[in-house]
Length: 430
Image (cartoon, rainbow, N blue to C red; front, side, top):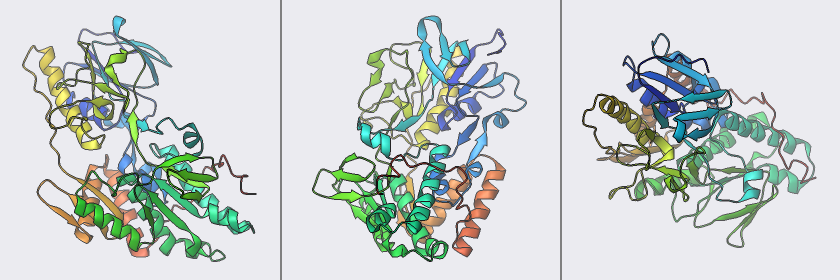
């Protein structure tokens, strides 16, 4: 990998997500060699992926080059690599570009879509965990309308214009709201030869309320917002199969559709080589102690979505969201410095700063520790928080200008099929 061997401790970080970057930033200008490994050369701001998928933003406005974050730092190195295995006996990580030894290893590999073992759903449904996947959804949505315009088969046209979003968490709710706004103000102008009223947007939730991690009031308001936008909300319904043509559920309800977007859950992106007892099968996450150290290892840590830290307050671990990842990354940087100097370390205590979701123009729900509010003000708060959290001044300006333009013109300019997506079952309705 061409990483110089020097006499200071080497910390290898796997993953350039929220947790990995927070840790790397916390080790700036210290006598520590930091090596960051990631299979992409950019950081993705995942909370806005749904806007890329629905044509509201271009992908480069929510991505930031990792190398630019660490320009001119003396002991920092980035390598574009995919880690395939950890060899704890040799203090070594094995990647597709070579092997690398470490003094301290931090697994911050994030999460991936959880299909709960259903191979058919995994084969035919769309997922949205990365920029390429968001672009695939954008292309497929637009290609569906192009195909609907050409077909004379009513069943096929209805299936092409029927969108199923499985999962009523923040991702599913925000995506459904964005699609509903496209249906209301954009698609009728783009496709005047189609009756866009036939377009159906369905959110299927397995529990009795949407975004059930938030308060009941916010959950109810989010559902009301979606219903007012014309979205069909199905609760207490589980999707059991999708063959590329028909969605079946645990009831008699079925859906003919060409598009299923799976937002029903995530699991940890673990790496081979760790002891089996370190991995909790339920969510495929790595068990860590209150210092984020992996059980059974002295110099290997895990932070962010992939880490499972259980406590009395959080018996199932902390939520797989940006805030726990950022907080764990920042604290681990301090604890690593303390460990190297032989000083006392601090246990991790999660500070819940609240949660929020937007359901479209002037519609959002916000739960803060002391206040809970919904509507226009919540929408402005959501915008401010997300804009402030973006990395890079350029990205902040571009996203802000896009939002202003979209708000004034009620438009989404990036309705582009740049990279056509071939639906795996595109011939099934013909």
